[in-house]
Length: 347
Image 1 (cartoon, rainbow, N blue to C red):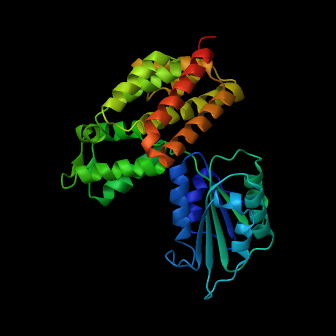
Image 2: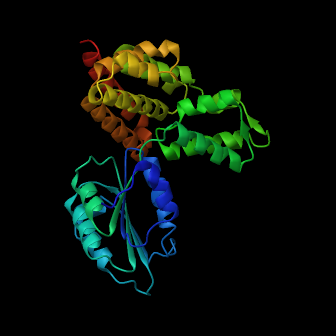
Image 3: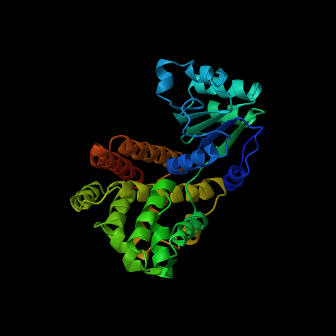
């Protein structure tokens, strides 16, 4: 089967196998999907500024013309050379699945197809087609874990010749990771703020993270976890009034539910006790926040957690598509999750 495990993807991107002509990059971390697609595009023997040999499509382009993707794949370069077809926002649409199947069965020698997709479940048609094709490859992208976040911090700050104090690093690790591009932009902003100082301190991190303190964001997330709808509404009002990006709350909430999903997997799949799992995964959580986490872990189940992660992912995507409405989109999504949490955690 042509697929890589999450920890193998970076290695494949650095040394891609040219025999794979259809490359599916998918996962809940949209920023990481986009970043890795861009990295793969640079390995194709084509000038990315050449509009004749590079075709960039959005999944919406295929709604009106489902055959366009296959037409582009089968087209011949006007002036010769390799071609790159780059599709963003793909799902399990038949047109995309058929195109991957066609390329995998009869791969063209001079065309590469890169597909960016969201979180595809195991067995979904697009993912299954890419995994089983002889000339296609499926590359999963999941939210950065602690090790990847540390590496990202070192990479971005190191490029600016900056060291970082242990407290500042810990603060960053706790507040990054939901989206690779968002994390990278936050680090670049921090590096610019600390230019010429030599070392990044915790005060620098707090100063550059916005007027809404991490405590306010944590308060909002804890209200979501415990189903405190009125408390959440009050916290969001204060955060929005401070001119901070409410996206940070969505991001922090996603990280929290990703942790809960892992914990519920151990509880439901390996029959571990809640106290045992909390002891293992709750060590980095501030002691004041542990009651909210425990309440959520006991109330939510694996399937419900998957649903809420998809809900958060869609909300984050919508805030990017409609930045003028991001406050309303985020508030509506978070309040809906809090309402559901109030039912699940009150049992």
